[in-house]
Length: 585
Image (cartoon, rainbow, N blue to C red; front, side, top):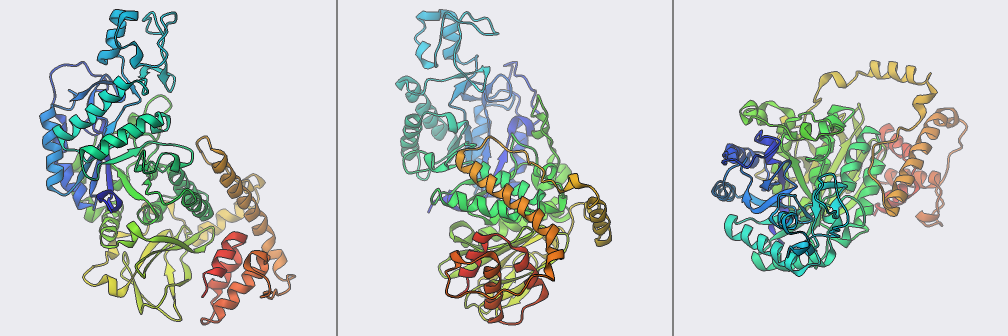
């Protein structure tokens, strides 16, 4: 295994964090990158072991319209500053990856400037895609060209041109020799030529042991990019969407379905995140700010490599604007957050999760097994070398009990709370507080590790968590408004056919949940008890038969509580019930 399989990433957009001017006048370097040196200790303190930083190189504006791939942006400083910064990270045991913007250049890039000057006679005409001297653009160059995203500011490179390939590979070699980096995040990887990516992978394998290539990919079957010939990982936008909307809609089925969908692609080590420089801050995105806790418990424990975007560990806001991403990329003064690890519950939670992940190999390498799933509660195991780590999350405003299979160990300890759960009949009964999560580790594995009871925020903002009486009042008012029975459509990106199928299933399940909730009380008395038909396979059983079978299995392991009955009754998803029944041994 390599360093990146166990990494916890911190993500910095340096032009924003340092407060650099929005436009580059290419004047004398200003050493703003050096102001980020104190952040290295902070990154280490919250348990991050790797840094993704970029864009870094000379550009005219936001950094993705590159002017010079071999020169640090003068708004940030000099190449010497960058060399020293990476070395300082390495001294603290933090790996560093740069942003590789290789799909396009800016208009100030030397090859494009040569075409402007020499037109058809330029030796660089074929460095770009579809240069047409019979066309024009808003810049009135007297020629047109293919761009990225509809922006003529970003000129698309011809990645099938051997000269372009050799040039970019030389850039990678330069970054390793000059700055000693450990990997590259490829911008816009979902539109990069696959042969070009294979060339980059070949170079990556040559320049440094365990050199990591991660690509920005929004949609599609991630296994197209993540394999032995192209990239090691890609951005997990599918899980990003599920994590916030699964909490906003009280729909853990969306998250669990997304995990299964991703696992069907193969054993991929994806780059997981809840926000970044292109999307709204998770604290802004969440309808209930207290869900910050279960969201991040899942980020650190589901399969994949977790990443924290700078500032989000403090619970800062950041709303996406129509014509600018500046609000997502703010300048921050670390001195304003010097006591955050001890005084800010969001930061304390992130630091605790980083510590737990480092001490728990199963969270990096363990298999994933779903144990329990309802709209508001979710539990799964990460199994490695006969050690089972259990993760439990609850998005409800009330505490919830769970009865879960654990194996033969004697007891489990909640790594966040310090609570102890005895194992009885191969199972544990645990209670998860409202809007919370826990990581249960076998007691013998916790020796020498200290839980962090204060780290998990009871409520990130007290005014967003209503009392039971307030919830009842709101529910009574909502019941008078038929419009509120409609399922809101969450903001989502364009879907592939596979993603559309999953989201259609989720939407239909949400609809069925509404119908079921409306009729459950009035039909409860009339419903005759159902007995499981053990002659059927779980797949052949009806929902009611599966529920009855699960309760019967539970009864064999000890007394059934009202909460256990409610949990089974609330689960009306056939596939989930089948998996649940099969989990009994």
